[in-house]
Structure formats: structure tokens, C-alpha cells
Amino acid sequence: MTINNFNSGPSILPGSVLEQAAAAIHSFNGTGLSILEIGHRTSHFVEVMEEARNTVRKLMDLPATHEVLFLHGGATTQFMQVPMNLLNQGDSAAYCINGIWGSKAAREAGFFGKVLPVTDTTDCQHTCIRQPGEIPAGTAYLHLTSNNTVEGTQWEHFPITNVPLVADMSSDIFSRPMNFGQFDLIYAGAQKNMGAAGVNLVVVNQELLARKKDSIPAIMDYRQHIAAGSLMNTPPVFAVYVSMLTMRWIVEQGGLYEMDRRSREKSDLLYSSIDQNPLFITKVAREDRSRMNAVFFLADPQLEPAFLELCRKEGMVGVKGYRTIGGIRVSMYNALPLSSVQAFCELMKYFAEKNG
Image 1 (cartoon, rainbow, N blue to C red):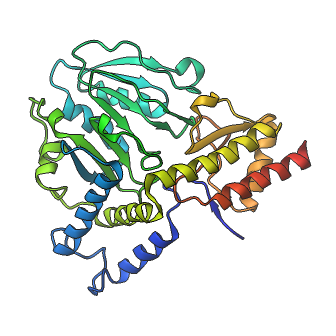
Image 2: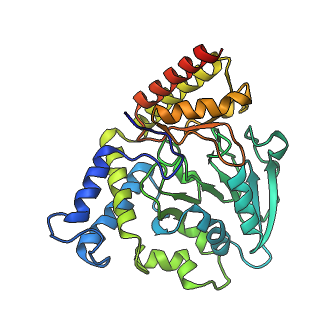
Image 3: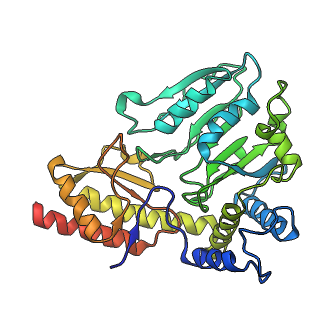
């Protein structure tokens, strides 16, 4: 049976990346040492880290002001590390509350300063994206989540603002070209579009960090990590290596424009199938539908267990919706082939014919 991996994260990786990573566990680049055994300050791994950082620069076309870091943990770690680095005592930060992760990020920031919710879609159960209202002068930064994995919404047009812009791009990083230089800080857990769980990408405008006056623990200070080239302490070596391989694969496949083309092809097919099938409905505003995570429901909720069981039998993995939302969630990250989406759409059609 063919397995179609729609997991929301950790998620599908390119086959060639898995093969290279598996080989490196036994012998990394012909050294006779496993990638799990090499010293992180040896030339072997320093070359991996530098390729990873340089590939981020290439994919994002970053200005010279922006620095690239690979740090421990997932994006949730950045919910505290961002305000810790960007807020001084008495500062305020603006947050877009467009989903669960934006809400959690705002709550964590409240430990370090005043949080201003400048847009909140709680009233529509986060099924749409709303641009922020007026941001008070002197606000330290504006934070948003570019793609909401749980609710299935995605920012198409980012706010134009006169304050530094911060984005959690964990679930749509490297899926489309954009002006990455408009953001003063980007962070992303690697386990969706750029590698394995355990490492965090942080891209930060160093000019923004110069504003920080209060002292913070060294291990949390972006400036310390920049000075050490992401080697301040032992990094998650294997996770960084898999991220490097994944980004190398993106470049080889044609870069972000090709990822964008594939993403549109997959998501257009799936949403078209949902819209044309009376057994399935999506509550997300059409203009805000995520191309990474399609969230939808059975028109008759009593049919959901039967559909999920059919998915299990047919090798459709990871399609049960987030525990607080329910329904169905199909994640279509870069490494997911079009054939998987085609197979899922055929299964939806089959189910409708049997139960319509």
C-alpha cells in the first residue's frame, strides 16, 4: 500500500534527503564517522552550518543587515526569545491574533512587556485574516503568524507598517517567493518545510538588536549567537544537517518560484475538489485559504469517523484535524508530491459516491 503523508509536522521530507541523511548516519562524507558523532566545531560540521546559513541567504535574497541563525528548539521557544531580545522595560509590542499560535505568542510576550492586540479574529473562530488597525507610535514591533496551521488560513498581503515587522513562518517558510527583507525578524521551526524537528531558523535585522538595553541570559541573546556563528553551544547537529539537505533540494528543484508553482497546483486541486463535493465544506474565507494546510469538515459530522477510517485503510496519513478544531486537515508542504493530493481527491470522490 502506498503511504501518502499529510502530517502537519513533523512532516514529509524529500526522498533524496532521507537517503542522504540515512547514509550520513553511518558515514558522513566518507569520514567513517557518523553525522551523529562528529564534533560541532570541526571543519566537517562548520561547513554544514555555513552552507545552511548561506542557502537561507540565497533563497531569501537577504540584505546585508540581516543575520541567519540556527538555534535549538521549535518556534514555541521564540514566543519568549523574541520579546526577550526586542523589548526593553516598559515597552509595548503589537500582536495579530489570527489563530492559536498567534494567541500563544502574545501570551508569552506578556511576561516581558505590554501586549497590544491590533487585530483579533476570535469572533469568526479564526477562519479569516484581518489587517491590523492603527499601531501606536513607539511600539517595539508588530508580530504575526504568516500561516495558521491549525485553522488553515494564510497571509497573502502583509501589513505595511512603520514599526519593525516580526513573523512566525514555521508552516510556510520557503513555499513562495516574497520580499523577506521587509521583515526585521523571521523565525521558523524546521519540521514542516525545511527539515527535521529540533532546530529553529531565526533571521534577524542586527540594527533592531542594537536597541536592546536590558541584560538577558547569554544563551537567549541573539547577539551572542550571531557573534558565535550559531555555535555558541552545541547545536542540534543532525537537525541542522537535514535542514541543509532540504534547502539544497529546494534550490535544485528550481527554488521558491518552483515551490510556489507546485503549491498552487496542489492546493487548487484540493480546494476545487472540496468545493465541488457536497459532502465536504470549508469554513475558511476563500481569499485567506492556506496553501499549506487545508482545514475542512464533513457536511454531516456523523460521517467523519467513517471517512477517517477509510483514509487509514487507504494509507492517507495525518489527516485528522487539530484536537481543538476537529474535522479534516490536509497538509501540503513542499515535499508532498502532487500524486498524493490527486489520490486524496479521488478518495473524497469515492466516499461521496458511496455516501451521497
